[in-house]
Image 1 (cartoon, rainbow, N blue to C red):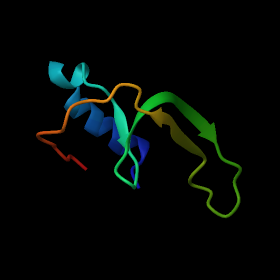
Image 2 (image 1 turned 90 degrees about the horizontal axis):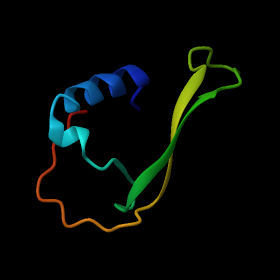
Image 3 (image 1 turned 120 degrees about the vertical axis):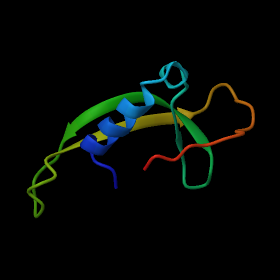
Amino acid sequence: MINGKTLTLVLDKFMKGEVAQNARVQVQMPNGDLHDIIEIKLMENMLLNNKFETHRIVLKTEEQRHLMSKVIRSSQIV
């Protein structure tokens, strides 16, 4: 699981380069399909047993509209 602080640190590292600033942002699904992000929401949780996770950031996706060419290199930060 990645929290908002970790997401920010990773995005800050990526955004130092112009290549990443103009890169398409996608989510890879468990089956390997790539989806485009169409919406980002901050949602508040109803507190039950876990009093620490009061909010969540949710990325809404859809199947990619325009297929991209094959990936030739990947950099994993987290």
